[in-house]
Image (tube, rainbow, N blue to C red; front, side):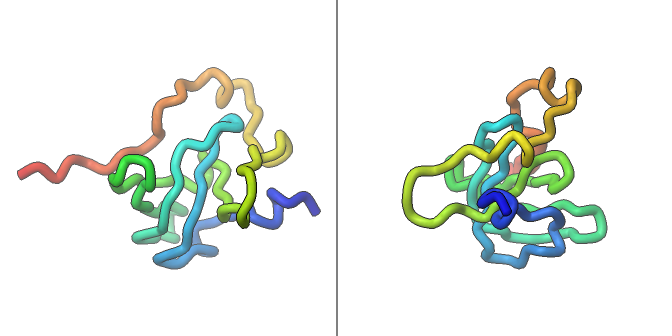
Length: 104
């Protein structure tokens, strides 16, 4: 079994609040942080993005979701774990979902 497959999360039902995750797309790390809320019925979950400090809505079907590797250099997910469809490779590298502003 590939190391990435052992770390891969295929459904938000595998997660609980507080779990650390990494969200990858096209071999690039987009988001990393702890799970703050899950919505298992539609396979979505929220994280607190470690880089920006903002909440991010993560779609487990649109991204490769991994549990972080142990100590050592970060490893890019193998091509087998990444969606390589023609449509996915032409998409922008912008975040797929972002929490609405709570300005009030």
